[in-house]
Length: 106
Image (cartoon, rainbow, N blue to C red; front, side, top):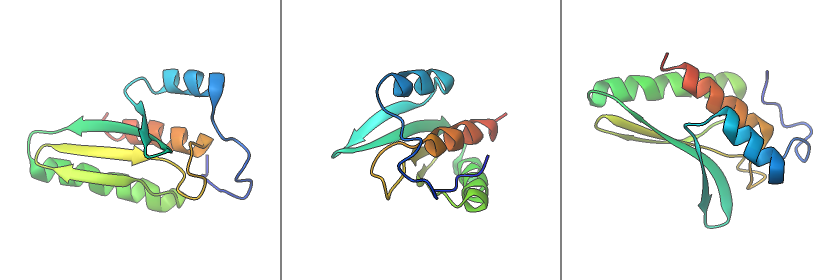
């Protein structure tokens, strides 16, 4: 599924839909960052190089979907934040991208 924002107000995830959507990606957490609602998850690795290679894979899927996260890369850890920057909220596409990110570690 493409993350096209042509219908930006459509597919905002709030209320009970948010609860159900979070159940579909159980390793992700809802994070409120100064009024901006984001999805976040930390991924752990054996060293910096492996963490960096994972971040590069996230970059590839984000480029292909034209939807970009914030990545925090540290020794043995990558923290990924998905949210729709222009909407300052969670969109269906953020949940899709979180699920695609999960698939990168399998």
